[in-house]
Image (cartoon, rainbow, N blue to C red; front, top):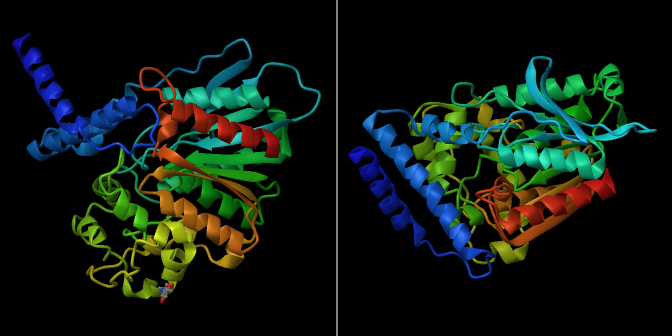
Length: 401
Ligand SMILES: *[C@@H]1O[C@H](CO)[C@@H](O)[C@H](O)[C@H]1NC(C)=O
């Protein structure tokens, strides 16, 4: 008992010490956001303490917290929900119960979680996918993939691609009553890295007959080669996701070598032979003036690491590295960016790259948005912001799919 009280007391002190971050003035529900951020930073702090003492790794602690939020597949009056697998990749399938005269639209949703955490089972994603199925009268597929650091890149891409390729077969689409010309791939955060990478691959894969009609990328993470974009600088200590944690997790996604995150913090992690790729993420040409005007462009220093990871030059890791001819095949794209997000500029640059090659893009920038807002749509951690983003996304799908 005494120990529990002590522990609770300690957590309260930690929480209190994290609550006085400055929350920008235009953010709605300031106190809630402040509390959310304090919860996230307290968890990070405790996880890092446990890691330093040797109790468990940072990622193990955070995954434990994520798993507390997992739901069972629950059917309701309108939607039948089942957990099953596509070619051994776990999925949660949402099928409208109402009879339909015509084949339905389909949305494949890939969840975020920095490649380390989460599942379609999370309350917020289960809620979003059920909501989408209901509003659109569509078949929705929530997709899981193996998680880092136990499985590193490209396991996450491979699982997503395998499941989606399986789904796109005639016999499977027919089985679920899906119209092959009306399929969308969506994802948030690292899930949208996978969504963007799989969409690129599907559109150019000659073996796949049915292509994607639209893609939706919600506060996407799209490149790992420049770790010093204006948004990385402005929101280094940002709400919910900080630069340090992003670098820690992105490094673990690739390698356990500790020299790597150190190099990445200094933006010196890329090999010499990657010079030609920087034009694809050159923010001094790709960002709208408003976002670059307060920053001076410096080229990253190459070749400082004693080894090079081939993965770093892989478009499945950084979809922004696809060249113009690869981007040209992409379908109508929805990109949603949040202002207060270290990943803001990834999304903004993809908008420019796609527009430059004539791909149709619809871009919503949420001036008071924070990273991972869609994860805060269900009690006790719900934000109006999450619901607003849900509605923008789902309304766009409804009009365009
Ligand atoms: C980035 O763009 C600037 C012009 O805005 C140019 O001077 C620089 O050489 C470019 N760097 C790369 C690597 O493309």
